[in-house]
Length: 531
Image 1 (cartoon, rainbow, N blue to C red):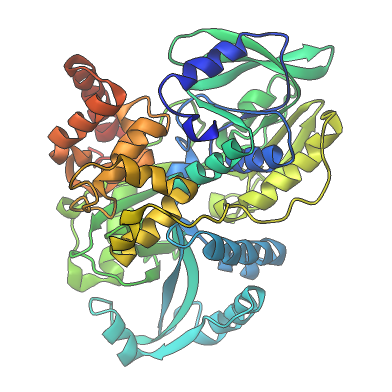
Image 2 (image 1 turned 45 degrees about the vertical axis):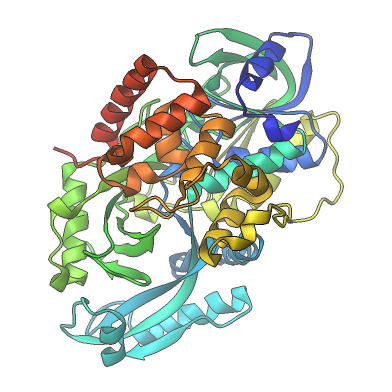
């Protein structure tokens, strides 16, 4: 059953199935981020025999390291890209309705300064269009004394007021997992740490893929009607077997996480950087405050994690100090950092910030590749990709399957009603159809919130047992986010985490020591403070 698809033993079952070279799939999807997850969800609900593969962990790439925002892209209106904004706003509204507790409205504030751009008139003109697409009015202007009241630490020099509007915030890696669970419910097979090594061809036509188990090196030849390349920033790598074209411009975006009490913000602030006038967000997330993002060419990409540079750290601290000088934020306040690589489709713009954010689809004779686009529009990206691939898929069902992404589910577990309302909302949003099973596996005291985070201890136990956790970083950086939110990557709670891993993953003391050392090395290099 799909409910147990990621439990211990089922990985081996699927890998043994892949050894059957006579089995034919309708579609193989390479890439376990939000784009691949969305495609798997739409393919499976159409009854297609679907296999999704991720050579690292689910959401390991861009989809666990975004700015956590489900937004319409207000600045795209100013750039003339009205279509992207319209679609994004409509999808944002859909996600807030379908997944409260996972995708939630967040207020945004743009402070206006004398002589600054954009001024209140221009900005509110853009917001009229933004709110029109949403079908409701979010925008509101505040005089400068009210802005100071809402934002006690804000820079008040030449402040003339502020405009508040609305977008949404999410936990991006949990969004990926929820979409993957919907795909599994409809029959998709989904596996991490197995990637597409190369393509199988009949002449010039792609007819499947050679897969490689990243943990053992074992390979499998798997046939399919179509192969979909949803590897995002890595899309050119697989396409290289079919074409010399290079379309992807990897752009790095970095963020820092600080304690909320050091930089208390009740909404997201759009701060214009004093050096280059780029908009930077300073926003509340999971009980902490995040500052980001940068936007720099990554100078190539490989199968390793991205890292924030020293220059990016200083750049982000500078804008935080400029916008909130009274907070006197410094390097010692930083809990963690993260850097993600965006898959921009290159147009030759001098600055990556000027590249378009819409997605592109390429058809290479049975290999259909997709890249670019926004987290918010993953459903629309999936539909466009399948539309390009359907001519290769013999069993494609072109009927109408509706736009609803998530199955509606109301918990029946008797203890749910006794939980505080904010935990009820979080668990329903983050776990959807799995919520009763999560509550059933909780031990005494594990419905308590983990200090420094918003998650409860039962979430770690559930993820370890039921969400395809292979390594400690899967558990602490992606299934839960305590590696980003808690000091030392969460290892201040080492004893409790080790006990859960021993009980649910069967890790021995030696395995724990190996996983801990591996995790600390990853965290210090890619999620800590750069030297």
